[in-house]
Length: 423
Ligand code: GLY
Ligand code: MN
Ligand code: MN
Image: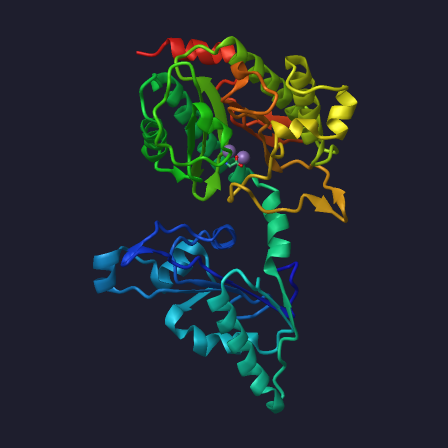
């Protein structure tokens, strides 16, 4: 509200409920921006911020208490709960918003509201503003500009507070345990979905959800970047790539590990794995305040290219291969992304066309990989179906970095030792 000033008002709706099929709804997930500002978990709610308004600056519209509806569909905070438990200055029934909101808009010049994310709600906001416009002949000032609330908000979300980091650490600890559990139960002949079930078991046991659809990709499936079918059998001699992370109170973890289904990396698998691991370590080492967003990626690309040359998978000089992006045949994604309430979190990667400098409180993933599908042109058969990604979550600290997901090993010997201890 301090950033907006007293000429402005902000409007932010809760996430809509989405239908899965007929009268079944998808599990409700609050909108990240709404959650960030309110912590309010229910649907059918609207946050309004009116800086400097005497009676109440933070108003939450939400569902009314209703014994019958609550018997069928679950508890509601009601207006009293919105004030007592969620710190709203005032609260009204959501059904009264059409009568109340135009009055709050009166006399405000700017409306902080993000157009385009929720077209049905956009229409309502425009309708409320138009109501004021029609009254303007009687001297009422109509808001003259819309400003996307997310500009301000997403920059705030990029810098994690201590409370946020502690939620993320909880999600990461549970996720690390889930990956270790997968390593400890994995055997040839199991189905990918059985491993997925072990992972989800760890998440739910801790009261958490999954932050995104888990990728449990055995053998050739590891070379499909967003593989989520998870319905193939795990074959002896293949690798298993798992990309899975829990979500704790809307804060995500994002971890990938790649390990041998039978507990021992083959020579070729280990060779590729070690290239990726070296690249990951080099990239992580670039995380510190003052370095820019692209430094870790450049470090990863250099090590991956060096490794590909050494393995004979590409040809040329290191410089030329980096310049021509010859690594891209086997490394086609970037080395990471911001991480927070959204797994691919908000926040600009460039400011004024320049890569952004890293600052304490930012959290990012570092996730290089190499993917060599079968029948890759000019690639010997022994490398086929090797897909490796290693992904950790890294916090930028005052003088460097902290790997927040070190609870599950990346060292291939440590992974084999963990798998050796299988029942
Ligand atoms: N799990 C999505 C990603 O790694 O970006
Ligand atoms: Mn990621
Ligand atoms: Mn991931």
